[in-house]
Image 1 (cartoon, helix red, strand yellow):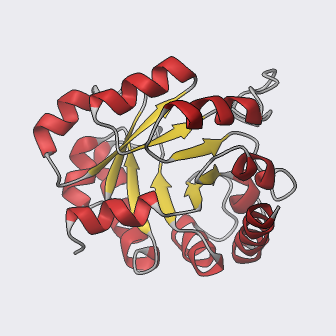
Image 2 (cartoon, rainbow, N blue to C red):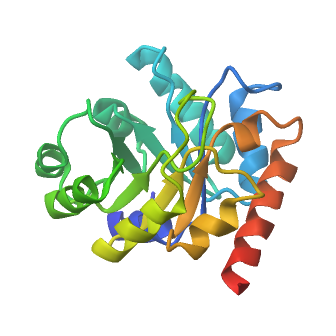
Length: 217
């Protein structure tokens, strides 16, 4: 198992994150995640709010076995599951335990990500001890119908105010991922752009190529 500083560095230097949604997978979530990791995903976030702790843990262990060799594993919201599964990080949202409380509980055992939606919230999360930020919603997305998205300008504003890595989320696809990289995001977080594709591995490769193209601009 990686040391805490190695875990954190893996996430900080990552470029492409996948958030799970088992309803989208055509061939099962562990298999889809493993294919995505082979295609270029660095970090897999387990976010399945409809499952209880027992089922989330079982799925986390399956993901660790299938995709964990090449990617970091993040558990969304459930600190207990993150610890039980030996995850690399826990992702905290507005309804989760506060970053300061989680840091006091786990110290350096886990990296801590904070989901934020604006500049001041991002600054507060960094001050509270978050190791990285997931920022959204950037573009219109399936999970936020009717919301036009904040656009890459929000990425630019947040990246200018914090010193920890910012990962953009929300409606990101191969056609727009270079925009968020160009705006200062360390990387991007996607769901359907990979899991809704019949070939998750190839979808991940397209996104990685687009990221590399954005770096060269």
